[in-house]
Image 1 (cartoon, rainbow, N blue to C red):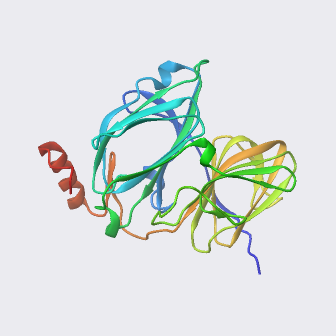
Image 2: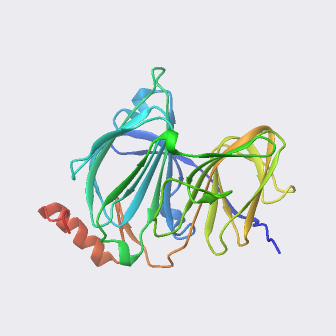
Length: 284
């Protein structure tokens, strides 16, 4: 018998400054660990003021995690220590597995009107994979399938399975699902999720009721953390609702986190930063 997940917790994103001075909204981060295991952080960068984002994220290291960049408007130019260069354009996704170590930079640019909008999700790697070889999965907008449901519901499928369709991002150890969901006004949608997986939604347009018709409607900038069950239910408000729906298998491992590096122990963290300082961080 299907069990609809109730809403266990709600967060609201808070303004913060990262990189060389990028103003963004943090949906969740360090202070919520391990509540959203295996997810560590979700940042929402949305601005029509170039001064908010042009400073960018100059060269910095990562180890032990995956970073997932999803750009809705504008673009993010990137380069890394392996010699890769490119640009994540509007509608594109980059799923970067930092693994044993990578040094990279990400420099945002707005549209002709100066608009920039996108998200970066950090997902943890288990101890057995923290020192795996770095890799990228770069997905262009046209390669992200959109599944259309009755009532005009539209779901972009970045990762996972939906109605017999598989998303383009594959072979991720935490078996995640990453959906961009649009539900028209007053329409309801029910979606099956894996038992035992962490599931959350982040509202990016409009408002909706999550988990129950009796629940208070939630709007933009809210993170909805679901409890246990095998499905989630959402009913859109009068203006419709758009949200990211993300789920993954919890790791249940200790988290030692400092800056852009996430390991299992403080000793591993210290080793990582010592290697970065002495030039032996890369090439494990």
